[in-house]
Every structure is written in C-alpha cells, then in structure tokens.
Amino acid sequence: MKKNFYHTFFLIATLITTGLFHSCANRNERLVVLYDKEFEYVKALAKKEGKHFGIILSRPDCPPCQHYIKHLGELYKDLASKVIFNIVDVSLPEHQWYRHWLATGASPTTCIFSPNGELKAVVAGITKNAIECIKSSIAGNTGCSRYFYRNHFRTSSDVIEVLNTLLNCKLDLDKGKDISDAINVALARSQHPYTVYLKSLSEVIKGQQAEAAYWANEFLQMVNSSSYLSRVYSNVNAKMRTIINPNHRPGEDEGILSVVEKIALGDRRFRQSDPFSLTLTNTGSSELVVHDIQSGCTCVRLASERTLTLQPQESQKVDFIFTGDIRGDVFREITFFSNGANPMQRVRLTATVK
Image (tube, rainbow, N blue to C red):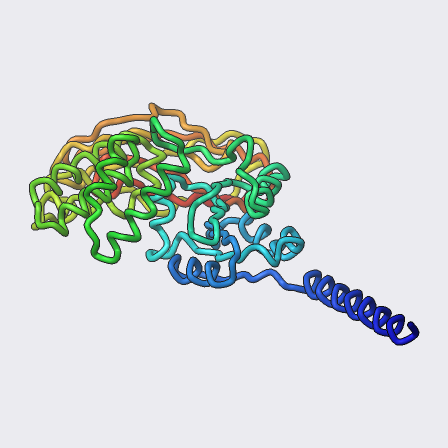
C-alpha cells in the first residue's frame, strides 16, 4: 500500500514537472525570422518543422515596414511555435517577382502559407485588424472575414485560388516544367498581368516565338494603360519588348521620357504657395503618352493637365505649385507614368521651409 502510494506520487510529480517544462519551453521559444531567403528554402524548412510560414514584403525606404519588422517578435510571440517569417526586400531584383505575382506595390504586405506551401491570406498594412487577420491565419483558421489586400486585377474566381495557381506556375516554370495547361486555366479565370507575363515566358521556353510575342504585346498594353500597374511592372517592360523584337534596343521605335532627376527649390516660406515647372522631353523615335503624374504629398499640387502627348523630340512644361506645410527640410518625389521605354520616371524635390 505504502509502496503504491509512493509510486503514484512519483508518477504525478513527474507528469507535473514535465508539463511545466514543456509549458516553459513553449513560452521561451523564440520566433524564427529569416531575411531574403528563397521561397523554396523557406517552404522546405516550414514543411520540415510543421509550421506555417509568412513572407513579408518590405523595402528599406518604408518606415512602416521597419517598425513592423522591429516588433515582429512581440506581435507574434504567442505563435512562435507555429510560424516562420521571411522578410524580403522587394527592391532587390531577385525578390521583385513577389510584387508582380500579387500585382501590388503596397509595403509591408504579409503573405501567410500553410506548412505545405499553400497561400492562406494576403494582408497589406499593419493596422490592428490586419495583425489580427494574420494571427488568425497562422492559428489555422479558415481565413479572415475580409481581406486587407486590394487585388489590381479582375477575376471570376477566388483571389487566393488564382494566386495559388500563379505561384505554382511560377515555381514550375523556374524548374523548366511545362505550365501550358495550368497557365491556360489561369488565363480563363483572371485578367492578371502576371498570368500574361508567365504565358509569354512559357511560349519562349517552348520555342513558340510568335505566340510569345503576342502575349508580350498583350502584357505591355495591359500594364501601360494603368499608372499603378506601370509602377509595379516597370522593370519587366524591356524584357517583354525584347520578346516582341529580339533585336530591340531601348528607345528604338518607342518614346523615351526625359526629365531632370532632381529639382532644388531652396528656401521657402511656411504656407506660402510658390509655382515651379518641369520640362518633359520625348527623346525617342515614337509618340509618347504621359498618362499620369503623381506627387508624393499635399505640399505639391499639379497645375497642368495630368495627361499629355509628346511627339519625337518635342518638349512641354508641366506646372506645379509648392506649399510648405511643415517647417524644416522637405524631400518628396514627383512621378511620371508613360507608355515609353522607361514607363516610370521619378523626380526628387527638395526644399527648406522656414
């Protein structure tokens, strides 16, 4: 009897101690955060450890991104045993495909995947509701009641389903696999520039130059009709033009927007409105259409038409009004979107408001 009592007591004590050990271990487990790792590497690691994984699209010049990254450990400490994060700098050439895939320029954007690599949620921003959506997806719930991601493409199917299809097409194409059937299904379900882009590349691999050129031209028409998409896909336009014409050289049979890279307004008075202008020149050999002009703040107001057409070698002035609404050094950007060889041109504006 006494022996059984001690045996039972020892067993209970062992179970309690073991439970406490595991509880402490779980509380002390640190969140795994990787930087600029390839997608397949993170996917394999997450599958091995049975964890979800998150890909965070970030940029060095994005203050909200840096704030978010700094507080990752604190935000997701209770989910450290369930998720791995990989922070990718989308300004690097090897990571720009994420923006093309999502058709977004928003940063930070968090993509949550299951341990098997299936996309579960895409969340833009770091609001309280956005963070709760991310946590819910990591915890394995079916998803958020609303998406915090605006897709800039039309689709007749579920957005996440389309993105999963395109992701698999991209990964298979990287491995040299034939994606004809899958990409044709995606084309039937959505009008997504990345679908058209991958279709063109797949035709190149199959040696179907005429088909590849057709889809490359479709891609250029699609993205150059939108200032937002022009910005997202600005770095692949030249590649598509080369598919259309293998002997293509920048500026050949197309317009080229030329404008100064920087304008210094010098000292300006607080809340005083001052006009200034920029001269745009088409140095290419074809007509150039500027279809949007955007300023980076309320302190710079466009005082001319937002769209204009320039014939080869023609120049036009575009007028703006600067109003210093904060004191100190001001750094802003004015962005021009066109159908030219360089579809997105930025002008950096500086001023000192006193």
